[in-house]
Length: 305
Image (cartoon, rainbow, N blue to C red; front, side, top):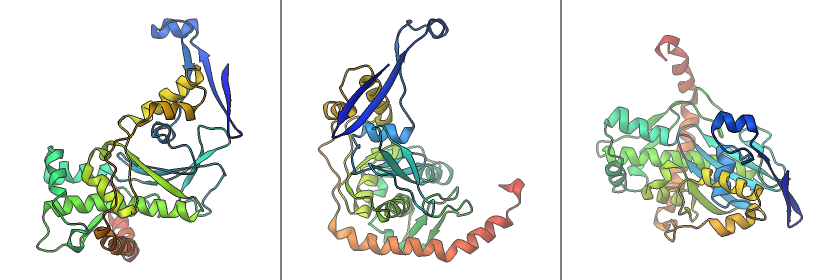
């Protein structure tokens, strides 16, 4: 059983079934309860952000970080730096670039280095540091990196530290380093011919207005956030509602359900040249240290890892 609808010539089929008697007995639910499938965290998050059409892009700040772009044409990166998966509307896909270390890097520094748990305080302190952190960079590759390097032996590091750097600058440098990593991923997708006009952010790190502003500045694009903070869960619920006939299609459901905060992060033009320079140095720093990263990593005994 399914619901089939047509949007601009694109057919969308969302299937549902009914809970069997045995499953109802096992779960304590009512026999005949509709059951519909959703999807992985990224496509459901894109749906929960209302990002369904070419030109949309999703930035996720979770343990890892992702940039995802929907496409009505099947694209893939010949260098295999990104992933291409089927998306919710039939005959559509999404392209994903990923960094392994987003909030993971931030939490590591706060919990294991600073040994603090007051995330709001540290976030506020990061907001007092200047854009570019007086030239300091952080490469967030604590567990290697995916897009664009596909380098499991890449490792993290602070670079260009001076006496005037303190913990506020170091925390902000981590936020900026993650933003540069996500921009690295987005650059790959854009060079695949994917336009990006609207940018939305979600994930635990998106709670930080400081981090949202940094990403808007680094990407040089406005950045929206939905009023609902559980975008992936909402996306799965939208799939279920469409499958059960509550809405004719996911487009209607998104239009009816999803709202955005009025407070959009807008790029600060004063920071553009700072971040353009820093992003270039970020890329150069990885390339200049890649061989040493690998050599140092290979020298570590397995039992010490």
